[in-house]
Image (cartoon, rainbow, N blue to C red; front, side):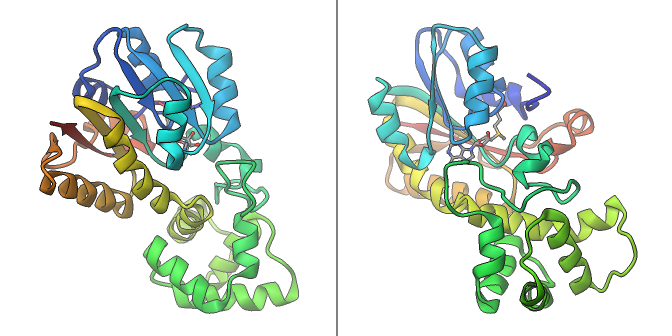
Amino acid sequence: MSRFHKPVLLESTIDLLQIKPGKKYIDATLGGGGHTERILSLGGVVLGIDVDQDAIDFASQHITNKNLVLVKGNFSNLEKIAHLNGFEKVSGVLFDLGVSSHQIDTPKRGFSFLKNGPLDMRMDQDSQVTAEYLVNVLGKGELYELFNRLGQESHASAISRTIISARRVKAIQTTNELLGVVAKAYGYKEDLSDFDKNKIGQKVFQALRIAVNSELANLEKALPQALRLLENKGRIAVISFHSLEDKIVKNIFKEFEKQNLGNAVTEKPIEPEKEEMRQNSRSKSAKLRVFAKN
Ligand SMILES: C[S@@+](CC[C@H](N)C(=O)[O-])C[C@H]1O[C@@H](n2cnc3c(N)ncnc32)[C@H](O)[C@@H]1O
């Protein structure tokens, strides 16, 4: 599994989901199937959903278990997908948000500022909107808003301006071209080290990825659906990777509590131990929150 994706916070997530043999679970973000495989090994029956066909293909080739149902779909339609597949009442729903290592590490998917590729960033290859489209079509104010709000990027204004002048000469079509434009906005002239690329690329690429995949809106739509799908005492576990996502999870769980629908099991989010962060740098920003229905 580890070549496709190494699961993050695996033990804590599985412990808090309290997996019971014969019970139904939804893994709304299948990825490389690391969490799903553990649920299956504990006797759970799993509906594994991913919006990326690569994840579905990988799991169907690598996990052979009659207790696994695989569906390519977006968790924004969670209830519909669950009902169509006989998962009306479930004991747990897992969201392990963001991108898989496979997506980041595959240059043609366009997620990485460290690897050159088309400026794509779609998790769902059937979707119409790419990062290239947004970068070349949005107006200066819209680009500013995107980098400022979704990337919390301090150079949002200079970057939007530089994008507008660069694309007047030629459309920005690759990850390297975009990084070059961002570098110019930051005032970098020489060849960039990976350290520099990280420093200037992370927020801009994150903002575009969130926008291309409507990540925040999908999460807001999915959590109430997950709660409705739960049987009594069922649990929702969410692993998030940046503050915008974590804030949404925290606030929606608070709202559920206010409506007396259950309680957050994790008062503060659970973060990986130092050892996990050392072994898997992608786990560094992970935060796990769990909610239990009454
Ligand atoms: C961090 S990975 C999950 C890793 C998985 N838990 C494992 O252990 O291998 C996140 C996955 O969620 C998928 N994903 C992200 N947003 C989604 C959405 N709205 N609907 C369905 N899948 C989504 C991505 O395509 C990616 O494969």
